[in-house]
Image (tube, rainbow, N blue to C red):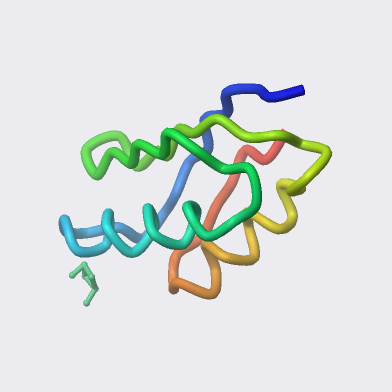
Length: 72
Ligand code: 9UX
């Protein structure tokens, strides 16, 4: 089933960074309603954990040049 998730994203310093992270997350299967906050260094989204793992999410964040923690 779908669930909401909040992750911390390190390395964003401008609104272009926010767009890069948003687009990276939106490419993943099942990920919807992506909201990225520069001020809070966080990304929130709704997804289906049976279709995409937090390891997958970490990978696209890192490929975009940022890093992610609190992946519980
Ligand atoms: Mo945010 Mo990166 O500018 O060039 S997109 S620092």
